[in-house]
Image (cartoon, rainbow over all chains, first blue to last red):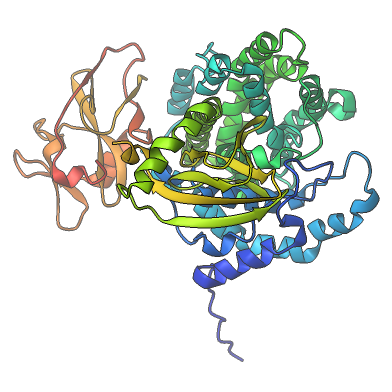
Amino acid sequence: MSHTPVPHEPFELRGDALREAVLAYAANPLYTDNEEWENSDNPYRRQLRPQVLPYLDFDRVPGRERILEYSSLAAQRLLTSIYEADLVFFPKAGLGELAEDFRRYYSPGNRARGELIRPALERFAFGFLDEEVEVSGDWTTEGLLAYLDELDVYAPGEPSAAEKAIRDSSDPQRAARMWLIQFAPDFLSEASPMARNVLGYYGDEQSEWFKILIDEYGYGVHETKHSTLFEATLESVGLGADLHRYWQYYLVSSLALNNYFHYLGKNHEHFFRYVGALYYTESTLVDFCRRAENLLKDVFDGSADARYFSEHVHIDQHHGRMALEKLVKPLIKRHGEQIIPEIVRGIEEFRLLSTIADEDFATQIAWMDDADRYKELHDPVYEAIREGRVTPPVADIVEPYGELSNTHSHEGDELCHIVSGTMRFVSGFNSYRILEAGEGTVIQRNRLHGAIIESEECVYQIFSVGDHRACLS
Amino acid sequence: MPVVTFKVSGADNCVRVADLPYVYIRTETGGSVLPASCPHRGGPLNLATVDAAGRRLVCPWHERGTSLSRLRRQVPAVRSGDTVTAVLPGPADVPVEHCHLPLSPALAAGA
């Protein structure tokens, strides 16, 4: 008896089907806008701004020059929510009244809908790396070791753009808190993406990787678990340590950096890429954490609990060595030099994402620090519009007291002009300006911001000016 | 083995190691670092064309074809954005000189 083979069609969700699937996922009540700036001990609530998603196109691959745009922020928020449904979270205060949220987040429906859209969102979020990083030639172990040697991962490095931005900020403590907030998605569930790689059955290297993992988890001693140390850091500078309290303040690049490891860990065809990224991050964290420890000590006059960072100065010297000697080299020996290009690619992709995140953070701090300047720019830009020298599209908006515009960004500069009422315009954690009737602010493209109405009603206009400098000439 | 980082285009798009120049080239099938010197008589492979089948670089001096896939395999390299890092043959302490070499249109698809 003969059988006709069933034609195999690779799974791919595109166009309207993708859009509808994204909307179906984000329609979960967990993902609606918050009425507060912060989440409060509820690890299941993640603001995805579902009302905006119908207008976003995820069926494309943005180039590097566009990965800080709002569509990317929306994609990274979605991916964080999808990846983390594999992890276990409970409120610090116990489940209490959040049992319904708990069930909604871990429900088969939420998880299945997330998995359905994940490949397309990953293509959208990380597809630019295919263009940006390219490995070529025949790599040998000798060549790889020469390349790793040249990276000089343990050498004392220069302060990153982010570290400089904090030290140079008009409010270094605020900037440092914003910085720590960016680490929270990673550090509070630290090594969870890595844990995806220790399941299964693949030989000695699996057990070696497990050793690194249990270091991160403090060998089962909760007080020494790295996330516990980071909680102490957050609390020592007056921040909350409950999961995703500061969801609205995460930058797109911070989420991308954390999601990158989930992306590699979730898709085991990228296993060797993860090994490369692991080696690089564990090795370079030694110097980074040394600088971070000093930075926090300086900025908070010694009052910050920086044990999280001092612990990594020590343990990551071991982890970098372990990643090379116990993972990279044995894996090459077992699987052949064919895996080296993927290891190199993981290193370079992580380096690139780190650079992007550093620069994005530094730009955000400048945007927060320059709040007065952007507020002053309202007058000449609005004047240009009023006189008809520029004619940008405008949205007229009326909002009631307490209406909170959850944080977002725009692909071009915008002008916010208050017609009547009062708005608190927020440009980052603890960074805001009060805007009264006749006032406003220029909103820089790709900069995270939000707003809340502080009068009974506020009538305002948003002009999409594109590049505000064009209004000044 | 010297490990050298240089630009994929413009000034300093070439490194010279032991008198042999290396450039980053990009054709429709991808990018790679290769010696810009024809194995025949040392002609400028940076100015080569690609044959009709897309398989060989044709040196402008004697129109000798060299397998593109063989050339691509010679130098392990990784490009990140507009810079490329290559692991070149030879002792690690060999002098390295950055310079510029023009590329033929066929080899500058990504420039």
